[in-house]
Image (cartoon, rainbow, N blue to C red; front, top):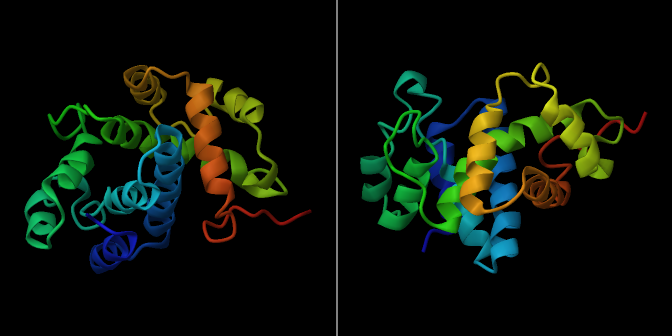
Length: 188
Protein backbone atom coordinates (compact mmCIF):
# COMPACT_ATOMS: atom_id res chain seq x y z
CA UNK A 1 0.00 0.00 0.00
CA UNK A 2 1.18 3.50 -0.83
CA UNK A 3 2.32 5.37 2.28
CA UNK A 4 2.20 9.11 2.77
CA UNK A 5 5.97 9.17 3.26
CA UNK A 6 6.55 7.41 -0.09
CA UNK A 7 4.03 9.70 -1.83
CA UNK A 8 5.88 12.76 -0.50
CA UNK A 9 9.21 11.35 -1.73
CA UNK A 10 7.82 10.74 -5.21
CA UNK A 11 6.03 14.09 -5.38
CA UNK A 12 9.21 15.91 -4.29
CA UNK A 13 11.04 14.53 -7.34
CA UNK A 14 8.60 16.28 -9.70
CA UNK A 15 6.89 19.17 -7.88
CA UNK A 16 8.99 22.20 -6.92
CA UNK A 17 6.64 25.22 -7.23
CA UNK A 18 5.27 26.38 -3.88
CA UNK A 19 1.68 26.84 -5.06
CA UNK A 20 1.61 23.28 -6.47
CA UNK A 21 3.10 21.88 -3.25
CA UNK A 22 0.39 23.68 -1.25
CA UNK A 23 -2.29 22.39 -3.64
CA UNK A 24 -1.00 18.82 -3.19
CA UNK A 25 -1.17 19.27 0.59
CA UNK A 26 -4.69 20.74 0.42
CA UNK A 27 -5.91 17.78 -1.62
CA UNK A 28 -3.97 15.37 0.61
CA UNK A 29 -5.66 16.60 3.79
CA UNK A 30 -9.10 16.87 2.18
CA UNK A 31 -8.71 13.27 0.98
CA UNK A 32 -7.78 12.19 4.50
CA UNK A 33 -10.98 13.76 5.78
CA UNK A 34 -13.00 12.00 3.07
CA UNK A 35 -11.36 8.67 3.99
CA UNK A 36 -12.36 9.22 7.61
CA UNK A 37 -15.94 9.95 6.50
CA UNK A 38 -16.07 6.70 4.51
CA UNK A 39 -14.33 4.67 7.22
CA UNK A 40 -11.26 4.06 5.04
CA UNK A 41 -7.49 4.28 5.65
CA UNK A 42 -6.77 7.99 6.15
CA UNK A 43 -3.05 7.90 5.38
CA UNK A 44 -3.58 5.83 2.23
CA UNK A 45 -6.12 8.32 0.84
CA UNK A 46 -3.84 11.21 1.84
CA UNK A 47 -0.98 9.58 -0.08
CA UNK A 48 -3.07 9.33 -3.24
CA UNK A 49 -4.13 12.98 -2.81
CA UNK A 50 -0.50 14.02 -2.37
CA UNK A 51 0.49 12.41 -5.69
CA UNK A 52 -2.54 13.41 -7.79
CA UNK A 53 -0.75 16.12 -9.81
CA UNK A 54 2.56 14.24 -10.07
CA UNK A 55 3.29 15.29 -13.68
CA UNK A 56 1.46 18.64 -13.81
CA UNK A 57 4.39 21.00 -13.20
CA UNK A 58 6.56 19.47 -15.94
CA UNK A 59 3.76 18.64 -18.39
CA UNK A 60 0.82 21.05 -17.83
CA UNK A 61 -0.40 20.60 -21.40
CA UNK A 62 -0.11 16.81 -21.17
CA UNK A 63 -1.34 16.39 -17.58
CA UNK A 64 -1.67 12.73 -16.51
CA UNK A 65 0.00 11.50 -19.71
CA UNK A 66 3.33 11.16 -17.83
CA UNK A 67 2.00 9.63 -14.63
CA UNK A 68 1.03 6.00 -15.11
CA UNK A 69 4.34 4.41 -16.18
CA UNK A 70 6.66 6.31 -13.81
CA UNK A 71 4.43 5.65 -10.80
CA UNK A 72 3.96 1.97 -11.64
CA UNK A 73 7.73 1.64 -12.09
CA UNK A 74 8.21 3.34 -8.71
CA UNK A 75 6.07 0.63 -7.12
CA UNK A 76 2.81 2.56 -6.71
CA UNK A 77 -0.05 0.02 -6.76
CA UNK A 78 -2.21 -0.09 -9.91
CA UNK A 79 -5.39 0.84 -8.01
CA UNK A 80 -3.74 3.99 -6.66
CA UNK A 81 -2.45 4.98 -10.11
CA UNK A 82 -5.94 4.42 -11.50
CA UNK A 83 -7.38 6.68 -8.79
CA UNK A 84 -4.88 9.40 -9.71
CA UNK A 85 -5.72 9.08 -13.42
CA UNK A 86 -9.46 9.21 -12.67
CA UNK A 87 -9.30 12.76 -11.31
CA UNK A 88 -8.79 13.93 -14.89
CA UNK A 89 -11.92 12.17 -16.14
CA UNK A 90 -13.52 14.02 -19.03
CA UNK A 91 -10.71 16.59 -19.05
CA UNK A 92 -7.53 14.73 -19.93
CA UNK A 93 -8.32 11.04 -19.31
CA UNK A 94 -11.17 8.63 -19.95
CA UNK A 95 -10.69 6.83 -16.61
CA UNK A 96 -14.11 7.15 -14.96
CA UNK A 97 -14.12 7.49 -11.16
CA UNK A 98 -15.78 4.36 -9.72
CA UNK A 99 -14.68 3.91 -6.10
CA UNK A 100 -15.34 6.35 -3.26
CA UNK A 101 -11.62 7.21 -3.31
CA UNK A 102 -11.70 8.01 -7.03
CA UNK A 103 -14.93 10.01 -6.79
CA UNK A 104 -13.57 11.92 -3.79
CA UNK A 105 -10.31 12.82 -5.55
CA UNK A 106 -12.21 13.92 -8.65
CA UNK A 107 -14.35 16.22 -6.48
CA UNK A 108 -11.91 17.65 -3.92
CA UNK A 109 -9.23 18.61 -6.47
CA UNK A 110 -11.30 21.62 -7.59
CA UNK A 111 -13.19 22.07 -4.31
CA UNK A 112 -10.02 22.71 -2.29
CA UNK A 113 -9.18 25.60 -4.63
CA UNK A 114 -12.33 27.46 -3.62
CA UNK A 115 -11.81 26.58 0.07
CA UNK A 116 -8.26 27.94 -0.11
CA UNK A 117 -9.41 31.15 -1.83
CA UNK A 118 -12.12 31.67 0.84
CA UNK A 119 -9.69 31.07 3.68
CA UNK A 120 -7.10 33.49 2.27
CA UNK A 121 -9.63 36.33 2.47
CA UNK A 122 -10.27 35.87 6.17
CA UNK A 123 -8.23 37.30 9.07
CA UNK A 124 -8.19 33.88 10.79
CA UNK A 125 -7.82 31.93 7.57
CA UNK A 126 -9.45 28.53 7.54
CA UNK A 127 -9.50 28.27 11.35
CA UNK A 128 -12.95 29.87 11.62
CA UNK A 129 -14.24 29.22 8.09
CA UNK A 130 -17.76 27.85 8.17
CA UNK A 131 -19.53 26.03 5.38
CA UNK A 132 -22.14 28.81 5.17
CA UNK A 133 -19.44 31.33 4.19
CA UNK A 134 -17.96 28.84 1.74
CA UNK A 135 -21.34 28.28 0.06
CA UNK A 136 -21.80 32.03 -0.49
CA UNK A 137 -18.49 32.14 -2.35
CA UNK A 138 -19.24 28.89 -4.16
CA UNK A 139 -22.41 30.43 -5.61
CA UNK A 140 -20.49 33.50 -6.81
CA UNK A 141 -19.12 32.36 -10.19
CA UNK A 142 -16.67 35.28 -10.31
CA UNK A 143 -15.00 34.19 -7.07
CA UNK A 144 -12.14 31.71 -7.72
CA UNK A 145 -13.48 31.65 -11.27
CA UNK A 146 -10.94 29.10 -12.51
CA UNK A 147 -12.34 26.42 -10.17
CA UNK A 148 -14.83 24.31 -12.12
CA UNK A 149 -18.06 24.31 -10.11
CA UNK A 150 -19.84 22.00 -12.56
CA UNK A 151 -17.11 19.42 -12.07
CA UNK A 152 -17.49 19.76 -8.28
CA UNK A 153 -21.27 19.30 -8.56
CA UNK A 154 -20.79 16.30 -10.84
CA UNK A 155 -18.34 14.76 -8.37
CA UNK A 156 -20.70 15.33 -5.44
CA UNK A 157 -23.48 13.73 -7.48
CA UNK A 158 -21.24 10.69 -8.08
CA UNK A 159 -20.68 10.50 -4.33
CA UNK A 160 -24.40 10.89 -3.63
CA UNK A 161 -23.62 13.90 -1.45
CA UNK A 162 -24.42 17.62 -1.35
CA UNK A 163 -21.68 20.17 -2.13
CA UNK A 164 -22.07 21.71 1.33
CA UNK A 165 -21.52 18.34 3.05
CA UNK A 166 -18.37 17.50 1.06
CA UNK A 167 -17.10 21.05 1.64
CA UNK A 168 -17.68 20.75 5.40
CA UNK A 169 -15.68 17.50 5.51
CA UNK A 170 -12.82 19.02 3.49
CA UNK A 171 -12.74 22.26 5.49
CA UNK A 172 -12.47 20.26 8.73
CA UNK A 173 -9.70 18.12 7.26
CA UNK A 174 -7.74 21.14 6.09
CA UNK A 175 -8.27 23.09 9.36
CA UNK A 176 -6.17 20.55 11.26
CA UNK A 177 -3.21 21.53 9.06
CA UNK A 178 -3.91 25.28 8.74
CA UNK A 179 -0.36 26.32 9.62
CA UNK A 180 1.33 23.91 7.20
CA UNK A 181 -0.90 24.87 4.26
CA UNK A 182 -0.55 28.61 4.92
CA UNK A 183 -4.16 29.11 5.90
CA UNK A 184 -3.87 29.99 9.61
CA UNK A 185 -4.54 33.65 8.80
CA UNK A 186 -2.91 36.78 10.16
CA UNK A 187 -5.24 37.22 13.11
CA UNK A 188 -5.84 40.87 12.20
